Image 1 (cartoon, one colour):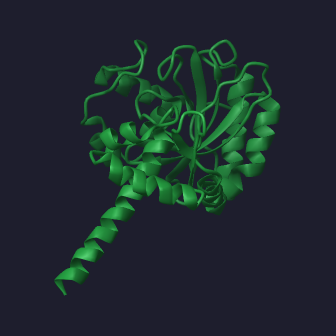
Image 2 (cartoon, one colour; image 1 turned 180 degrees about the vertical axis):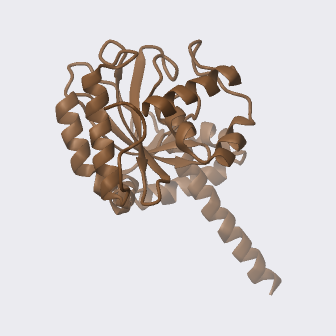
Amino acid sequence: MPKISSEKTEGIQSVVLALSILEALGKARSHLGVTALAEALGTTKSRIHRHLQTLVQQGYIVQSPMTERYRLGSRLIELGNAATHASDIASVAAQPMRKLRDASEQAVILGQIEDDGIRILTTLGGKMPVEVGVRPGSVLGFSTSAQGKMALSFMPEPNRTRILAKPLQAETSYSITDLDVLNQHLDDIRTRGWADAPNEAAVGLNALSFPLLGPSGELVGSLAIVSLTQFIGSPPSQKQIKAVGTAAQEISNAMGYIGDLPGNWR
């Protein structure tokens, strides 16, 4: 019996380590080697190497023949795409997102609200000569992104209080780090119905975000366009505001929300 228990525990730990490796590779901005992964996950290089070889064999990660470093593989990407397509909100939003992209020519981003921020579910590339975007699966901060500030504005008060109990983090010198200033900003967002964040997540970047509401008026996600500040100003153009608001309204109604989205954006 003790042997069985030990094998079970070891097996669970192996699964956890394999998942941690995949998460580390997913968050990395570049390919990672064995040493970097071992240091990041606090384990030995030999243990990391064994798991990497298994993941390579199964197609979940790929090793570069030039650098011998690792990145996510096609099989994992396929699973991620399957998870995205399985999401009701992603399916409902697909057509309005395409219409919004064609009307605005900017990249369109769909997100869902999580405890740590806004998880990007899916994106549509824009039609501009120079384009910026956000990777699916990445998480945007509550106080430094248009999507996050929009979520703070329209989420239930207890949720907002819990999130804002933590110190506000700055991504750039333009990020809002004063709670009183942020609360006034959130009041303005509720009044107008949309949020932007010029230079707050990254200098030169702006986004325009609207809430997506469910049957009971609950916040179920965020819709945004994102681009350079020269293409999405602050405030954004009325044409851009109306385009994103109209798409968010269509998605919300399709999700069961009855009535107009809040704000004086029309």
